[in-house]
Amino acid sequence: MHGVGKAILAALACAALPASAWEPLWTSAWTYAAPPYAANPVQLFLAADGASFALVDVTYDSAAHAVLAKFESDGTFAWTSSRDAWAVAGEALLDDARVAVVGIDPSGTAFVRVVDAGDGSFLWENQIEDAVIDPVGASDLHAAAGASDGTLLVRARDEDDLVVLRFAADGTALPEWRWTAPDGPAYAFDIVATRDGGAVVAGQQNGIGGGFATVRFDANGVVAFADIELGDIGNPLGDSRAAVDADDATIVAASPETVHGVEGAQVWKIAADGTRLWTQKVPNPEGDLADLSAHGLALAPNGDAIVSVVTLISQKLRTVRLASADGAVVTDGSSTAAGMPTGFALAANGRALIGAYYFIDSSGHVAPELAEFDGAGRPCRVVDDASLHGGVVVAGADGWYVLGETHPLVTLQHFDAAGACDGTDPDTVFENGFEPLR
Image (cartoon, rainbow, N blue to C red; front, top):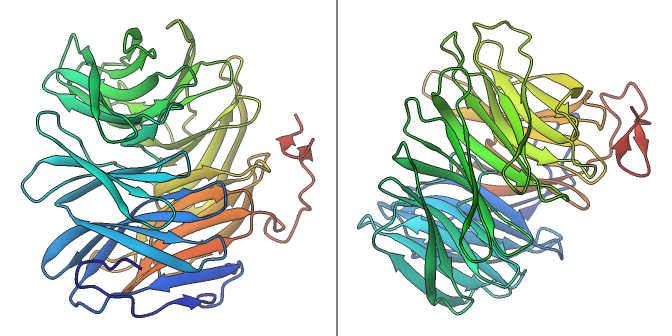
């Protein structure tokens, strides 16, 4: 078992948290014996065998650390691997055999560290001297991705350029891929490995007037397309995120500034050759003067885009499904839960889960909110547990996994994804296992 600096494993529990209408199937928790400490859940990845890899920004001994923790499929704690880090950028699961952690060390230099997914043993580390790697803005954004040939791809920026850093399976640095923004500087938010060995990077150029930039590189690092979305007036607000569908088209979700000076959630689709297929503004039920921001993106098996959005006024958690063919709104549902989204996931049965947080006191303490939706976009169940902080969510083959923090515990919870929606309507909207009837 690997330690976390001077921190040691002090507690492990597999039991439900305080009673709520929707109980977790199990909860695993660990704590450290080196007070004072703080923990901020960053990301959670699931391996094919059901094991979970939790990335947490942990502070102890007056220093910050990037901590990677593995849990087995039944919630049993396996090991932790730790490194001093001023900031944690993200993680990537590579071929279910290796896990990469990307961060910034106390000197300000970015690093990529790879460990064995089986036992957490150190494999290699590379320092990144020139390019800048920004931390992820949400748990479903990616700082790195694993290519089909085992190469690790890391999104970065270098002055006006958007860059993909590349490392072979043994840690050897490979020639980087680069796109120079015509209206720089460029910023990178999300990266997705493509089936042909290339990558799509979602970002923006020039915080004022430059718009959102989506760049696709082929397997040789040649720019296949660089798509610019200006929105109404060219100002990109917040993150952008990307997904690639079965037809090799790229779907992007972001929040350009509207003519009314607020965020406007928007989704667009780009063919593999760079042709814009459609652009859709998400309807705003609270009016044109209310901020509406996109916080999550997932693709249904038929290619429909499902986006999680929230308005600044009500903060009601909401999912909107857009048709793959033309971006038309298929379903639109709002939960009774409210908060600021931190994660979004889509289960194999068509259900969606939004993880969010809300403030519980004037001191800035937050609690998580989980809002589930069925395949037709109807709100299902809600978890509101003021004892748990955080709300990183992912979907597994057997339900939802939620990473959070209850001082001094870091917790991993496993929820089912098949319960009745609010105990009212039977869940009969699925056809062929997962697709909603239209």
